[in-house]
Image 1: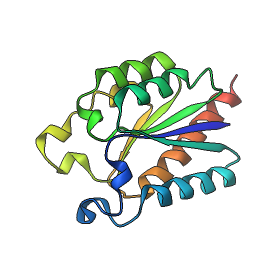
Image 2 (image 1 turned 90 degrees about the vertical axis):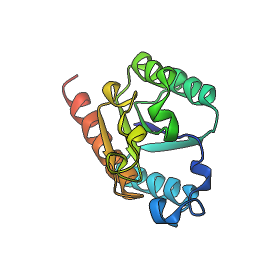
Image 3 (image 1 turned 180 degrees about the vertical axis):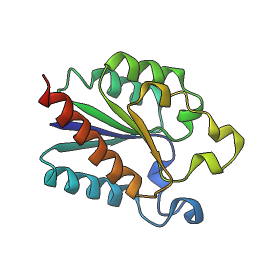
Image 4 (image 1 turned 60 degrees about the vertical axis):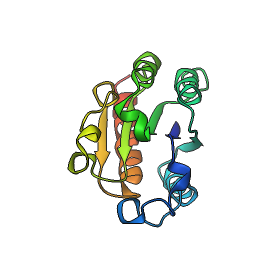
Amino acid sequence: MKILLLNGPNLQLLGRREPGIYGHTTLADIEQEVISLGAELNCSVTAFQSNCEGELVSRIGNAPLDGFDGIILNAGAYTHTSIALRDAISGAALPAVEVHLSNVASREEFRHHSYIAPVCAGVIAGFGKDSYLLALRALVSRLNHINKWQ
């Protein structure tokens, strides 16, 4: 099983950016924890971060052709603005989980709407780096369930 872990704009700043909201853990640390958990769950995880919407759209669109079975996506600010990412997820037709470090529902009003959530299998937010680990566990469970019935 192959999982694509995507991170959007400004997430390369984790560990330095607003640690009161996002914590002190770096993106590299999070990626390594997700990759390690993936190995425990018998799946490989490929991580990619970009500040460019088009690069994220291309990665999502190519995910099925690249052999990925599912996607974990923290689109950052693009969550609230990008119809292109929404359409890419819908078009890729792979199970996807939207993740956020913070509880976006308890933050500024503009963060309350996600264009991405309606085309995802689920959303996990507010658990810091554990949001990613929970997302991986949920996605692998869903994929195992889907594969069991095929």
